[in-house]
Image (cartoon, rainbow, N blue to C red; front, side):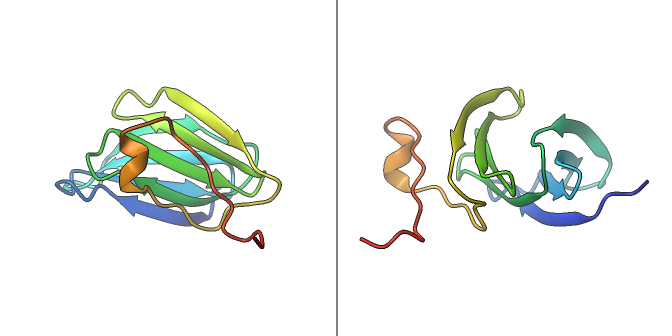
Length: 112
């Protein structure tokens, strides 16, 4: 059966890579020029809702309906860290300060 693509991310460094996330929990990595598939990662237990490459294209973040955000070392695609959130993350971003220290997850939906 075919999966439904929910999100995609373009490598902003040089456009060489495209990542797509689907309703089956898999993340697919594509060649950004030929659009040939490169890798398939069993990333999550539920729908992948958001993907984002960091500016240097050394990390790929994925968020899922299962309430987890995963950081993947790029291009090895080894899972570096998993954040367990209370609910699904709809969007991801990398903050400049995060590159200098430990990765952090922030829930912007919580009231202060």
